Image (tube, rainbow, N blue to C red; front, side, top):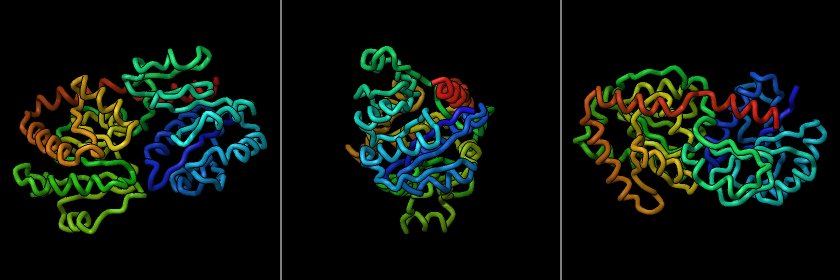
Length: 345
């Protein structure tokens, strides 16, 4: 039986998308007969990991100072006879990976920035545009590259959807939404009376958030009066998406989940690693990009409102065509492909 470690964190800063995609890959590894061990700096991922009955080891380190944990990590891996690891964090350094390599640990790393050629055995970037970002010229030939949407690790629940003309609007700004972007968007949508949201059950806003999200008093007021439904730390994400006519989402893995369900979506960014996906989907005419909230909040809100009027005015047949195009992007087997690659690393 293959033993494989997954190194990932989650907190108010690190988006929960990291742990969710790691759990998807872990489930695929389990189906392939592997023994999966989650490793984290602290206890924050335990509720996610325990829910799916995976083993976990806590390093007791600082999540944003990974060099300080390297020696303890290697001792643990060697004591458990684990020599393969999947790493999903931006806090790594070249020295961190160099130590792992010298200790005989084979590493697959999600590198969606393509800025440094890390000393790892394999690199993953499941953005459809990843094949044109220069990984082949930056990384040495012996590094295995898993690039493009065939490696999107989406959960099984997102498979098998056909067009369903829902009524609500889905809003998501990441699991923690430390910038309070959901509040900004929802406030502006509800105050734009011509959009018709918040006027009844069919026009409700659905806010999808993770366990680290802290809703404001204003947001909870909208929840209490029935204009917003807060879905926090839920499992039935695909079902919630399918009830919506459209979505506004940060440009992370959620975009691919929305593709799988076929929900017309406008994307935005608030961190650098989201930009590649946002621009790709916009360039291909799949999902319009409304902007970077770090640059101009007003610009993003204006573009969002304009798009909502546009999507609200199209016919069901047009939405069906858009939905079909989105569902063609993801085949749902990405996690299995990565699991097989990890086992054979």
